[in-house]
Image: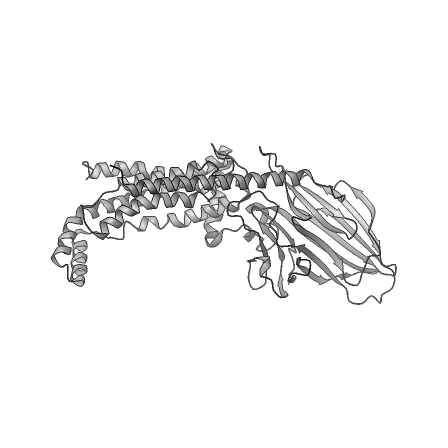
Length: 501
């Protein structure tokens, strides 16, 4: 009554699902606990803090560097209210420092002035040249650093300003695990967007561009110049396991010395936020090779969110809209399959008549298709528009900050995989149901029939396994899209083939 291979495959699938659930939930809970612990340890190192309500910046007065940076997030139910984007500890070394060539501070900087959102440091070298560093905010996600060097004499030489990130290869402190990828990102005069693993830097690399920084899931940290291109330099790992990358430029001379101004972005990957930072900075919102479609989806999703106030329902409305627009293509696809089934006896007759002459079979079938006004590729064309939309939805729900921490029904985070695996399993079941409902050709024997039966058994579980690791947002889109496909599919098949044969 039961096929032993089917029973074995089902038990194996249940075991795999159990192992994935155990691994996935454990990894997420560990990441979340670590992130909450890090969040609660803010300021424990004794650095000077300035804040604008969106960013908390911690500055080390020993060398005048920005050692820690926290970005406040939207209200969440898991205890995480801010994410650390920069740090200098055993887990992650990632900090930023501006410096002037030829100036070496004699000891630590002194605090000249401080408010809740600004800090002024001053230091001097052995020749009594002084360097003043002013830290302040310019908007919710930009920190400005103004360096002013006052000289005792004018024999200081050529002055360069360096704006440098220091980072090891460890992952950023971010609890997200679904398709999370940290990488170096920068724009050059030759390429508007470059991304590479920091460990790929083997030798010094120099470019010219408007910005360079480091990107992680949902966030990016970068030094930028909106108006002018600067020299970008990347350095390989040093003896301490630290990489360096950033800007270098000629400091601007003044009557008594030199000045340099630095802009540092620390913020979320939101389309509207990134577009105003610097040329080509918006590409930090990584939407793959379907970037244009992804941008369009973000605009539409934001519009729907403004109507319903929920990102999950915004995905539902987007799916309904696309399904309505593409419904004529689905009707064409199903009708094509039905017509193919009705032509199957004639096709079988041609194959039996000319079974030893493949060329003759091809010619006879082409004549049959022409006579019946049937295009065998018509059933494939409707699938083409859905592929780039699906890919764009994957990139959008994975990268866009809008979906971070947003819950929907049983799903706690649309940007992460479904922890209960309900949506992926639903997708697999509906795919199997859709296959069972499709018009079936006359019973055939041999390899072709066996392959068809095996694909019906194997493909839905394989699809479920793939969707287990995808952001829940794109799985929800796929589940609703499939559900909306099954209903008209059933209606059309019953109308054109009432006996369901």
